[in-house]
Image (cartoon, rainbow, N blue to C red):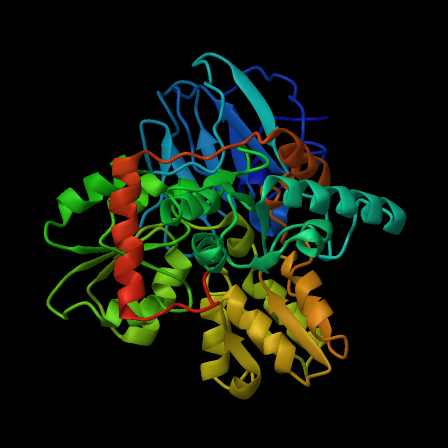
Length: 462
């Protein structure tokens, strides 16, 4: 592991700190005239290097683009943000806490340790190795033994196993139902099973509990979080609402129960535009937390009174326009499926509008919509811009089509935290129960039911 002070060359372009292992603590540095450079690069699921110098304690938010932040030890906090890769001007920095120029980026992807004012340290955040969506951790014989035991225990407990589209292949194959989070939560509400074992991330299990308050919902790993759901808290949403009294709050289902409880109406990626169209034209709208889905909704509805929170899924945001250009050049006749959370969505639609991509072969779809499209397409190749876990299901649905990831490193480490071993342990012990207090659940349920009253979202959730 090697870490060095920033140079003028560093400040002229992005680079990496650390050795790319994704773990460990880097060596300490002595402050200098130009003490350090913060390099944050979440895009493409690469390791994240964070170097901080002479900063007050803070919990920062890493964006999916690269930040270059110059730090001067003689001053309290950073002098200025050098560049923001979104093309929206320099980031505004206040008391050492990074903030985006369009909207304060208040949420956190990963918590950072408190940084002493007089020290300089570097840490490497978790990372995901390159995957194509079909890697397995069990041999065929091991899988059959494991799956038989999982099914036996599930039957013994009266449990139904629900798996999200982004789970590892073994989990998807053994589950009773696979789909997006809202679809799975509705299945949970309708099933007669006593227990719901939810193989996904924490907000998804919360949503299942909200819609099934009398059932036991188990999550095999409570550390399986979500960078998008964590990009806004209930307190931050209340502050935002206070700045816009009378505005209607529309929250993506990829939010915590506490945020849903502060929401007027939820939406999915497949029905977000319909939800927004249902709101009177004279009402302001606060849309959270995904900035890319929000931008997509503003585009397709033509409404200019929508305020969009600057949150994002770090995996989807890391699927970049350059990925699209490279893959389209390599596969010029392929169909293109893009999730609206992706950082490349705007660029893809711009390319379509200028005739650089064929409109008849380019679709912006939810994960559920991608599954439906995969089952019917006759295209020899399909480029898929979303988390790579869904490729396992798409390939199983249509063996005659080659499904190619737009970015083969777009893997969510939090989804992959639900392992075969953890699922088996949950079924053996009954551990990992998810609870939502009754008042929060009731308020959050109203926001979900308000969405359903507009029209069933179908299988196309997030």
